[in-house]
Amino acid sequence: MNSKNSVVYQIYVKSFCDSNGDGIGDLNGIRSKLPYLKSLGVDYIWVTPFYPSPMFDNGYDVADYCAVNPLFGTMADCEAMIDEANRLGIGFMFDMVFNHTSWDHEWFRKALTGDPEYMDYYIFRDGVNGGPPLDWTSSFGTPAWEYVPALDKWYLHLFDKSQPDLNWENPKVREGLKNVIRFWKGKGVKGFRFDVFNLISKPEHLEQCGSGRGINYCKDGPRIHEFIRELVTDTGIDGMVTVGEMSSTTLENCIRYSNPANRELSMCFNFHHLKVDYKNGDKWTLMEPDWNALGQLFREWQEEMSKQGGWSAAFWCNHDQPRIVSRFGDEGAYWKQSAKMLGTFIHLLRGTPYIYQGEEIGMTNAHFTSIEQYNDVESVNYYKILLERGVSAADALEVLRQRSRDNARTPMQWNAQRNAGFTDGAPWLEVPDNYRSINVETEESDPDSILNYYRELVRLRKELPVIADGEIRFLQTGDKRVFAYERALGRQRLTVVCNFSGDERNASFADAPGAESGTVLLANGPKDQIERLQNGVLKLRPYEAFAILRE
Ligand code: TEU
Ligand code: CA
Picture 1 (cartoon, protein in one colour):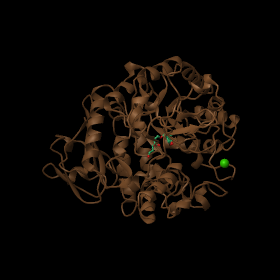
Picture 2 (picture 1 turned 45 degrees about the vertical axis):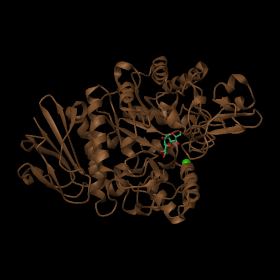
Picture 3 (picture 1 turned 90 degrees about the vertical axis):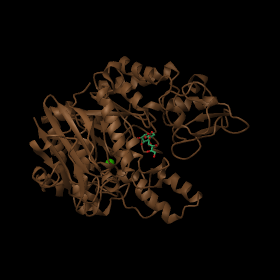
Picture 4 (picture 1 turned 180 degrees about the vertical axis):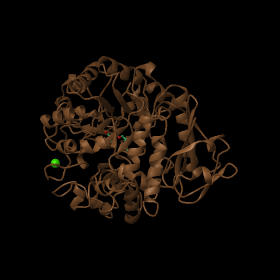
């Protein structure tokens, strides 16, 4: 597997940098920003899908896995981007959307003609009593089965109806997808991210499943480990960096996916920690974060992964999540402190940290005020669903302001000029109005900026083996909004303390004996923590974060 001191940067291509003024980010735009990414110190770039697509789900509906969408550039642009990054020592990780294709993919087009060979690439079933085979909903709120009158059959789509699910039981599907990996590997790509990967193995007796959200029946299915191992070993990518998006997986499965002995993946994303503010598990009902649950989840997953040889992807943000500073931090009075605190917590964990574009400068949620400003299929669908549930338009908009995926997808804020320097044209999604103060150029010139703090976090992981390789143990702090952990390697100890609140809080050091004999390695404010410690208790500043190192 890749080395444990690596850091990954995620680019949402549509919103990163537009090189030709059409308002849409593109591959040449990415290439032009490689020196910036080099200066951040990242090792890999995960770039979201840029393949031909009708864009119902912004490219996660792939019509051709081995080509470039003209919206984003050409194959020559793509090759130049890969080669340039490789020269700089940065590897690309491409996004493999293998649970489903677009309905424009040639396999599905052939299936729709009734060709039995290609119908078996997908999951077609007969209806029941004139309705779908099962009463399932998709992840985007719509029914999960779509009727095809010409075939008198229904097909499964766990996401949008333009994203029919593939039938992984069919060896031809698996072979076809292996060829996609081989193709990009041949172009010099250094790793892969696999979209909703733990949904690919469907239940053995699909027809007998109950009703509800389809994905709940499909996660970590019966042949999942076999399918992953086969794909990885047959394409020879088991030495490369690979990450599976494993929404709602179990800890036990996560360890199996990522323990090198199983030859499956380098690591997994899971989202349990990003559901602690979902009321009764519903993303669309607002709730304050359950801090106890958040602390407990990190403790359990980090410690067990460490003990049982698993490896985590450590992250707060991606293109599907609201901005973390707006969510678990404070984008107002404590914008800078809280963004740095959240970065500290993730980057000093055991696992590979991911930085989502704009996180490193403390980008916030979009602050949209009208439904017309939203683009995302999920947001648009759920706005309607919320109104149907009787939620007022104002309340529904408030839910979107906090939960919409578009919060993450606003253009990258490069400078204080028009459109934040993202494009010379009209951006496909509006730029938040705070770009005049929150942008790369401004933060480059401020030694105390969030950007420069992230640079330090990345550098420390490379300098200190205790960060990259150490064991982890969570500490009792006596406060549910103060999270602390200790990393250990040989005789070295790194104690990390983070105040996840905008109040002064007391942190007990009883669980970290000897910490006061170390030195403060890093802090998001003055490095005076050891002097302030009294009788093993430290009064923390709002959103304070620091790390103490000792031999
Ligand atoms: O995401 C899957 C996923 O779990 C989330 O999109 C989830 O549906 C959403 O956050 C629920 O609120 C992956 C991609 O990251 C996403 O962009 C795609 O839309 C989705 O798969 C389908 O390919
Ligand atoms: Ca463009």
